[in-house]
Length: 169
Image 1 (cartoon, rainbow, N blue to C red):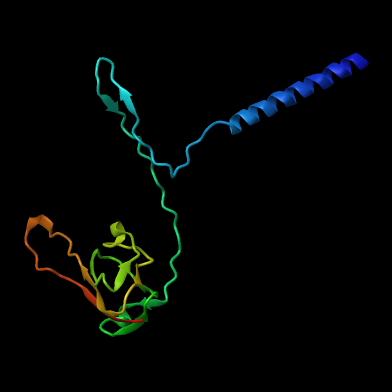
Image 2 (image 1 turned 90 degrees about the vertical axis):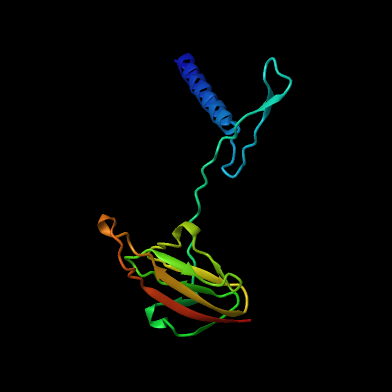
């Protein structure tokens, strides 16, 4: 009976030993961080004196969502009313749903924090700008009229919001 227990004990030890080796082997597998930029490797083409470049493999980058906290929030009640802000503050202009927008501002005073692909339709959070210098600007939103049905010309039905901004040091 002692002999049977000893064999069972050795069998468990061997299994534990193999599991440990498998785990160590998995940990030792080289990985490439997602932030690494692939480079093209030069290889010789048989029968040629010049190297051929391998095409780099593109890596998809997923942006990390962050919450931007605004110091000043502008709504329709601020239309045509001057707002004074300080350099370094963040301005949030709420979106007016149902439209696509052209957004204009003086980029020497404001830096858009909203992604370029979101400027026409920013969604529920609206547009965000950081005040980067003292000066005067306006954030102007002009709606983009939808195309007319049937290809007939339509008069533009444009909505326009103007938010005057005075930035101080």
